[in-house]
Image 1 (cartoon, rainbow, N blue to C red):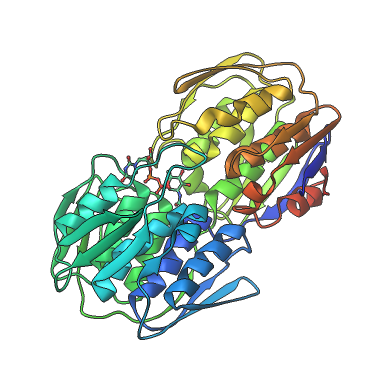
Image 2: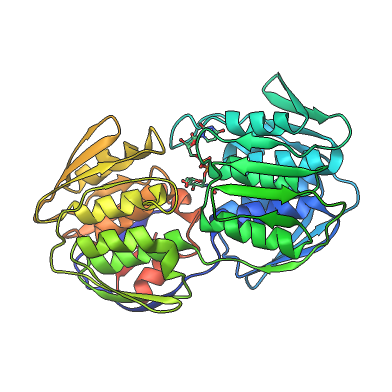
Length: 416
Ligand code: UD1
């Protein structure tokens, strides 16, 4: 089992480059199902989740090739509209193949995803939206058997909650549907705007991506394109906290500062100096952060995927912070690991009270999920002595080479 070993106490300095956003790429890979041809995505990091989605696509019949951060997907005329359990279990985002497979072939057989590291994670909004478009679903032996009589029809769908995945599934279904699909209370995440941009490049007609009402006018056909992926704001934010927690001076290059609006504001409230360029963010960390309260919310609120990293920072603040998690019921599961490093945190249901401590003390911990794993590495950068983070495969799902990037900024860090 591989581990990441961090020697704490070094101030990080220098600059680090961010690549394409995992949460955009996974859906943009699925968009390749919509039409035969050679699709390309540029600036794709080599992360485990991309490999896993590649396996899902390969199962369906798409040939995926990866070369120097260019991902090429060749979609044949005939595809197998199926995503089996062993793949869906590993790659929950596979559920977004439903929309495009139904649009393309009129049927899909996709394993019902169970819960995951972050909690129960239902898919009711994906299903009811697609039902409104004419799909029918039957759950048979753990498989969702979906069919549509003829072509999907445009529909008026109101989401109960601005779900990222449901918004994307409906957009991917709507582009080839008969008529217009309106998605009300749509998610506004930058990754959704980027997926819409790719689909428009493919010939789709989409209005309002990035707002709460998205209109998709179905078209007869699409073509394969090459798309430049939006930078990963969570990876950028993780490096920003790395600079902040070590009292360092770190410049993140190739990012979109506006996509981290709320997160950077909260860092500033914690006493971090933040300089925003057109595609760079520079952070200069304080000796000790100030306490800050925040709540996770859909974009443009504070991103739930930045919550553990921010909690790691606040664990050494000069006072108490209150953090409210509004997206996932099990997102605070990592707090016990952070407490092994000496953090003083009480979790009550969806709230955490973080009483800042003077110092953290290195210890062996386990990464419970991607972002919490990264947060434990960040805490290790601040802790006295050695922190060993196990279960690093979680971290590898979303970070191309966190160890090399942090080492290039001066961290004492290695993999063993
Ligand atoms: C995506 C991101 C994930 C991020 C999340 C929120 C990917 C691959 N993952 O996940 O990293 O944390 O957005 O920004 O892009 N829900 C329902 N019913 C549904 C759908 C969702 O109840 O049909 C609930 C979920 O359980 C969760 C909330 O809605 O509590 C938000 O989920 P959603 O926005 O759908 O997240 P994902 O698309 O799964």
